[in-house]
Structure formats: structure tokens, C-alpha cells
Length: 252
Figure 1 (cartoon, rainbow, N blue to C red):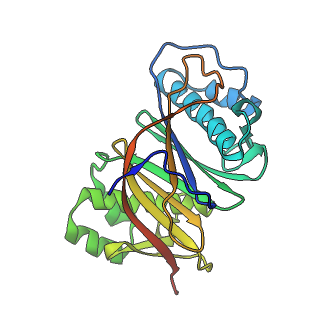
Figure 2: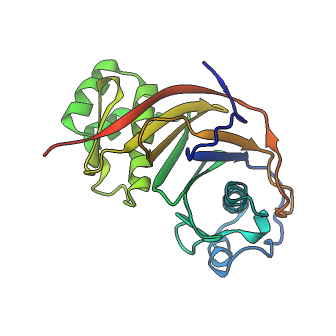
């Protein structure tokens, strides 16, 4: 099964906006950066600098297209970009890796996003043995499939972002069992997860909702060389749905 990156539904489903990072020489930092962003990007150089600029450019595109305002009128809150500062009313989640940036948006509702290259799975057994629950260890080692591990990992990362927590000491707050039955430590009964492939990456979104739905996924043209905030056009791209799940509340 495949979907178009421009599939649209009018309901309040999560949206995921993606763009590829472009290579190039160092440039003057764009004027639209906030003071916090300017201070942060000043610590980077080379590919890491361009990755940061690409992700902040994408955040403004994502807010603008979600709120239907020009991107140059948009910015995230200072610090971790988990919400829009201007205009208000949007929750955000950011992920980037190896040349691709992604930003998930949702109107006034928790959301978490993680993306990983499909080939990133070196020494995954060590991660499972050290950080995963005994239940997870048992079925993951039995399956012995690095791609299965990667799906579990992105679920955990997206869950922690959606619930506002870091990795340290929290990876087992979400337990993923065989066939991707998912149990979390939050009492609410409306947590959902969706996982798909796009552009050679695994993309997982965790959000609050009454039922599992596929996010609206849009690949945008890459940022211009000078990172000017022109309204980016969508690029047609296919994606492959993998699974949707309701996250059940794990009893103590």
C-alpha cells in the first residue's frame, strides 16, 4: 500500500512536513533567526550548521502551512521547539538525521515525532539488552531483525517527545510487545501511534486522538541557498504505511 505525500484530509490529523538538506558553503545567518537560534547556530559549523538552519527553516514552513499564514510571520518558542511562539496554538515536534529534516504539527495537542534512516541499526542488540524491558528483549532477540528494532526505537523516541520527557531513565515508560502491541505509562486512553516509510527513512508519530489515523505527510522543496523564507512548494513523494496502533495504559 502506498500513499501520496500530498494526500489530504480535513480532520485534525497530525501533519508531518519534511525537506532535504542542501550542501553548500558557509553563508551569512538569515535575519529571521531569533536571538536564541542565532546564539545556538553560532556554536556549529559545516554540515551541522546547515542542518540546524534547515530544521529552523522547516519549522517556519510547517507552522505557516498549518496555520495558513506566511512563513516569515512564524517562529517557535525559545529553547526546545515544541510549540509555536507566533502564531500561538500549535504543538511541534522536530527530528532530523543524515540530510533529512522533519517537523510534525498538531493544533493544541501533544505530538511526538522521530525519524531514522532505514539502515541505522549497528549494535542494536546492546541497546536492547541495556535499556529495554525483559518482555521487549525476549521477542526482539527471538526475531533478530534490526528493522524491527528500529521501529521499536522510533516509537519510544516519539513517545518521549510527545509526553515531554528525555531518554534518560524513561525508555521503559513505553513497552512495545510482539506484533507491536504498545503499552504506555500515561493514564489517558487516547494515545495513538503511526509508523511509515518515506524517502528511505522510518518515520513514527505519537499523538492524542480518538482513533488511529495516518498523518498528512508532505515533502517540501529544499531550502534556497540563502534560507530565505519563501513559501516552499510540495514535492510529490510516495510513502509506505507500516502500522497504526492505540497505545494502551500499562497497569503497574
